[in-house]
Amino acid sequence: MKEIEQLLIRPTETFKLSSFDPNDTFGKKREHLDSEVDKLKLIMASLQYKLYVENERSLLIIIQGMDASGKDGIVRHVISAFNPISCTVKSFKAPTTDEIAHDFLWRVHNAVPRKGFVGVFNRSHYEDVVEVRVQNLVPKSVWFPRFDQIKQFEKMLAENKIKILKFFLHISKQEQKQRLHDRLSHPDKRWKVNVEDYKKRKKWPEYMTAYTDAIINCTMNEAPWYVIPANYKWFRNWAVAKIITNALTEMKIKYPKSPPHHKKINV
Image (cartoon, rainbow, N blue to C red; front, side, top):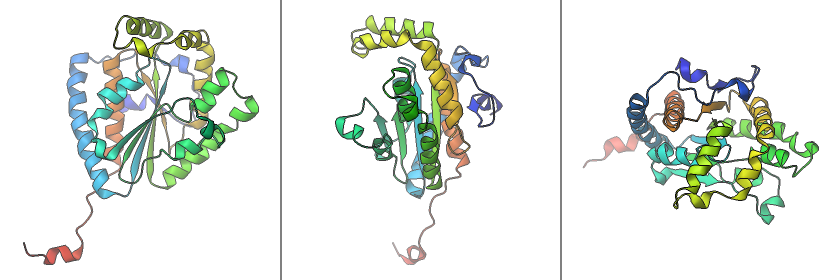
């Protein structure tokens, strides 16, 4: 637990992404963590079922990171533990014309999980304070106030019994270069790469600054940010699975009590 707490960004602390080593594994070995992830996924599935049956609260998991940081990998290797009957995964792309005509949180609120469900955002409303800032799509007078708007939005969700976990998958620029190269070498992954991925690499420092500001301005007790060292995929998977399992456990989810009239039913 203490190791995982090192990844938690608290509202009152000074924070810089540069202080986190994307190669960090806490000295753990892959063979040990791979087997532990399998056990954690079984616990996740069991707790998800209880959450679904309880039908009082929900869990929202937000995944952010640079291209090739492992967002899809987390969905495939960790989120796959959840039964799709009560788990939704939403991938936010560039906003449509209709979405642009509304406030930036409109499309996000519509995707928030209902009671009893787990919802996963693969990219999220944080694109509206990172991507738009780095690419100069809107002025500072637009993106900067969004920090407070996001905090108010997430506080509202928390007050409505939605547990929020936010993960930034932290990889190095060199690791991203290798992963993009590997994608080009595999026909089944080549489609993921486009010229924009390489253009964005030229603005790596700007992205790191924008993410640092987004994390420190929007981490809250109600909706904490975790920075996950993600150069090693097996450690990334374990850290995210461990945090999700801990959060679900701490929710102390209980099966609902049977109504009194059930006791009178003779089978």
